[in-house]
Image (tube, rainbow, N blue to C red; front, side):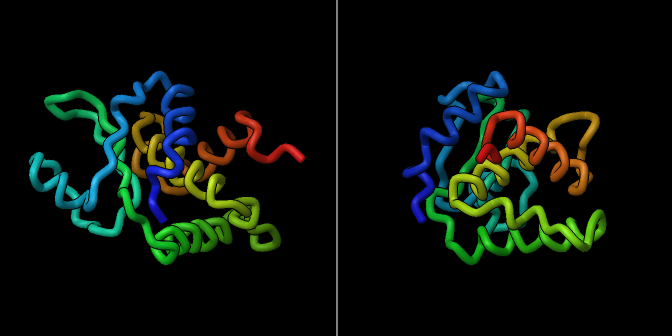
Length: 140
């Protein structure tokens, strides 16, 4: 999938958190971009990464071509983490479109920049779903 096809989604989400659309950077390989900019990152399949401190300011890196397998791996990781909270309800099932999956990935990545969330993936998941609810992603 070419993530540039979802530019408007990313632009909207950037706007919601006072980030500039100019700070969306589509790249072939996030790990390679990070290596070139002296930023630690080893996951060459990573679909999104928020980089807070670069000489050019804050950047949301988005892998230009993200395979369905990579997206599904990230959603499956959410499924596993969700079981810690509730085995009867899998909130990953709420991500029933590619737009919702990409919004979740964006928001969970953004959440890691928040001091109250940090690197806690469960807290990032909770924050992302709360924001998706607030933004109307789950309205019927």
